[in-house]
Image (cartoon, rainbow, N blue to C red; front, top):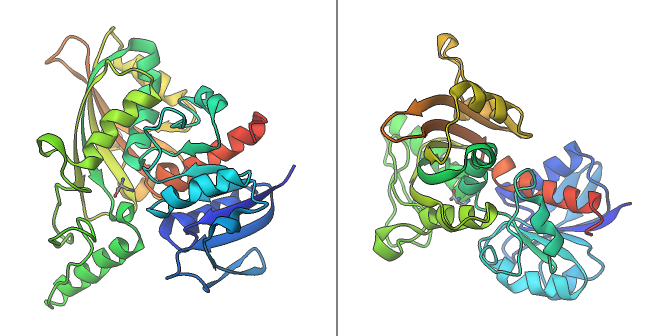
Amino acid sequence: KKFNVAILGATGAVGQEFLKLIAERNFPYNELKLLASERSAGKQIDFRGKTYTVEQAAPDSFKDVQIALFAGGAASKIFAPEAVKRGAVVIDNSSAFRMDPDVPLVVPEVNPEALKKHKGIIANPNCSTIIMVMALKPIYDKAGIKRIVVSTYQAVSGAGKEAIDELTDQTRAVMAEQEVKATILPGASLSKHYQIAFNLLPQIDVFVAENYTKEEMKMVHETHKILNDPSIGITATTVRVPVYRSHSESVNIEMKRPLSIEETKEILAAFPGVIVQDDPAEMLYPMPLTASDRNEVFVGRIRPDHTVKYGLNLWVVGDQIRKGAALNALQIAEHMIDQNLI
Ligand code: 2RA
């Protein structure tokens, strides 16, 4: 069976990856509609031997659309209900609906059962959350988790194409001993901007209660919803690093029951979508450059944390644009087709 598909945000980093993955995975589409904001409307995109003209998104853009892939951003809030009204299933990468009780928040390998209750909108979790829960789910099922302390090292791609370009331009400027311009990071709409090249920015999104950032609280609330367990203690520090497109995370967990390192490696290796890269004798561990453009999440530096009863340290790396955004959303659509939920 083939479906009429629309991509909202087709010209951005995630939108471009949707197209790449649709081709790579031979996703079953009939009609393909590329939608964007007024700024990007009119652009021509060649895809599989056909030239598409990006249209400015409007409510009626979703007429006859069955699967709407939303790359993210403010447009989601406006167009998701309009698309559902016209009969589409919306898989939304923005944070707009993630905590809505009527909206499943899904990583297909982790909580596919949540898809059954969808009412038209399915939310794609935040990239840093997806990457973390892929590693935690097999451990959670086997040994339970009491507490998670996570520090992230997030690629600039999370802030979009402009941030990717900013890293390149700033790096060149530093090397050429020219003036460095900062206009995007840590956030385009924020009052100040700082250089990311050769720097680290301990702010992703805005500050909220107790001077946590929205990004840090997303990791807390979204993980509770995905694992359906608000009892887990979670605290996060999310940091932007001068890396192009993979997020890395140092994850410390306290389990409820004992789990040997050997068994941890076994259950991680057996989990679909996870690859264990952990052989210190061979200096084998996940790195952003080896994880980029890959579909899997990579786990290494697996070691016990003897400061608590059942402690464990993990180093987790995943491609932010693929598994962190476009791939996970497309896998949700594939799973829904498979389960006749669309
Ligand atoms: C970021 N997770 O990395 C956020 C949104 N993709 O900027």
